[in-house]
Image (cartoon, rainbow, N blue to C red):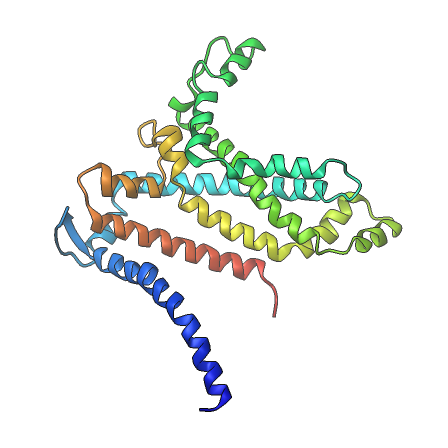
Length: 290
């Protein structure tokens, strides 16, 4: 046996266990879920239903509401969060800034908080007798406590605020990593040429960080379309399913109501297709490399 063949066989031997695990734990369940999505019925009493589940979801008012909610969160929260993360990363990349390690840690820390814990904290903050209402009443903005989580728009705004608070620091770390690969001499040369900090930001920082911005945009889109914890723990999908997300509705269909795994699997594949299409569009629009 030649040395090259031995090396090839050794490589395959190292790759085989991990490949087998990925196939068994990821691809096989996905294949089973795909078959399940074409079956209809309750519990284990399933029969072949063809495309019934896929056509049903477009007549399901709650599912359509959950799709609208996810896009509402996506359109408002993701741009605000990414711009804020980019601004914070630019500020904290200043080599002359003191205690920048402390500031970076403080902004990243919400990302390390348990999803259930932070949702519970926001629920307490925006309760009728919560801190936000106490402050608004104290400063004369409100006469009495307002039930933020019991009104459609305010409940959605609370979810968006919670998402921005939690995930801005996470995205900021990606931008900081990208910024540290940009030579500081580029900024110094721009400064000598008379560029203002605002011009340096738009002409140097943003173009050089474009691949990182594209990456965070795709990850944030993916995460927002699969939003679950905030809808479950913060608003319970209410009031009257006004804030429910697609993943939350899939969970309810599978485990809260009478189990309909086929329909839940079909909705899951709808999310998969949606994420793939949006990621493809973002790649086409944002990635201009040859």
